[in-house]
Image 1: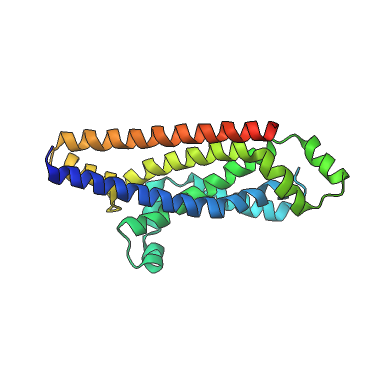
Image 2: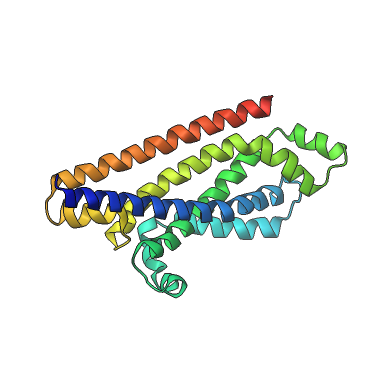
Length: 220
């Protein structure tokens, strides 16, 4: 493989990491509070609010049911308004974030719902308010599950970023299409696949270790 193609692979890898990294931050920043609200306003939550829960849950279900490639096309006009362009790595971040936020929300909600209700009831019996229960009970107890779910989110975003490349989103997906597919350069196609597999493996290993560490810390 020539030095030029090696440089292209490095550039594509960095673009993919940038897209996935930034969209992951947005997804976590918005998905975490969304998941908390879904959890505490559910029928078994500490701040039960059926209308609010139903409304948020419906919105989350709509976004989660739309395939990413369709979501990316549907968001082209809003994306152009937000970042000034409907193509490129910054444009891809908008659709990647939109796809990941509801997923993170459900992950957080599911992790918090799995917590033993007795722990929450004990905190309430001791006079803890809703905010204190969320900070000191729900989030610490649900942290291993949240980390595991967020790891899965990042892995999904790596795959989504490759699809974004098909529509000019940049990164390894764009490289695979322009060189691997359109120019029949099999070595480039194989290289992009190997790099993405390595990314996924690394993220999974780190996520698993963090989940185990937080579980040990929680159990003292």
